[in-house]
Image (cartoon, rainbow, N blue to C red; front, top):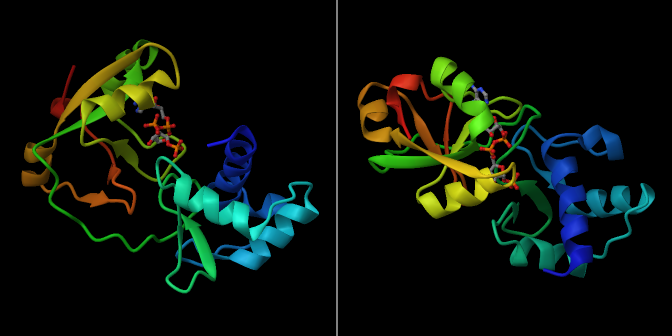
Length: 179
Ligand code: HQG
């Protein structure tokens, strides 16, 4: 995606996941925002954007971060929120192994406390180790942890699959982790 669209995508991501109030929009309880309201608010706050650009961002986003409602009138982020939203995800049986990408400096704390959601609502897990490596690489040399999702599920932990293929769980206690 061209540089300008990546920049716009980051601004939208911040608005729809973390700080809607910073540009004066509101999300409904399921995280949706009226598309015109979003565009107007972005323009008003110094980020001019057209409906065409927004559509390209939604369609062309490598991670499908955003989804439009069926009628195209509303938009929301598919995961990664820090604001309280109910994405109405239903619990789903995970694959036996999931992966988490992090960096060495977090390992000591993760070994003690397990994986925690930190600023987000869930711990984010990937179906494949390559995706986990990419996630870890955002912070430095990636370290990949294996999550025994089979045993977690069997022990009663609930997993959710986001609209863009990210596995979400409330926490991963240390006994289910191996590196
Ligand atoms: C670490 C991006 C110390 C955790 C990505 C991670 C992903 C701990 C960081 C999505 C810890 C949280 C999520 C503990 C977890 N002690 N550190 N007990 N438990 N951590 O960004 O998984 O571009 O909230 O390892 O591609 O890195 O936003 O989570 O390093 O899909 O669409 O604390 O964000 O997608 O960082 O990334 P994050 P994440 P988007």
